[in-house]
Length: 186
Image 1 (tube, one colour):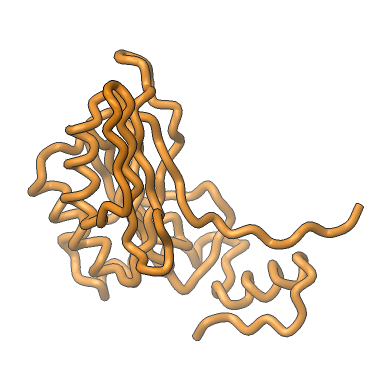
Image 2 (cartoon, one colour):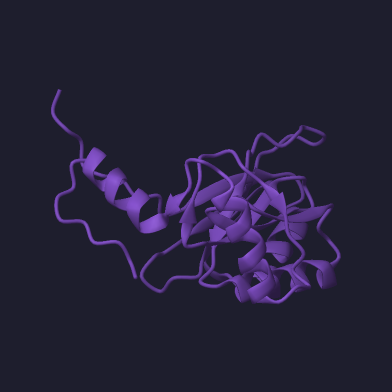
């Protein structure tokens, strides 16, 4: 079988029950811009973006039956720094609509998890400079300084016998994917 081209996830969408509440939640908390919106009676859909090169990066639409449980494992949004994760943590707490939340390091990422008004799990994360096998998790306190969180996370990952710098893991993964000459980000 011939190799298929590499795919990149560019957008995701979820069905919602209470469209106005969910629309307000995602637009206000994440600052999404509305690319297009359909309001056709019971059918409502919003195409949302935070990337001028992408018509939509997130879509919400009616269609989830009232009272049905979420089938979303998680919706993950990447940010550039640990402080960005911290800023979302503060915003989520101040917003007050998240049903619950917690913060953790997976060794390879620092993450904030919270549940939206319809109980879909959201993750805001950034990468660490390390890799350990997953699943892994250690609670972190985002009231601590970046230095304290880095030290705590580094101690956690170095205790794992399979620990390695993320660049080494990336090079091995690139080789396994048949990508020649891959250079990890510095």
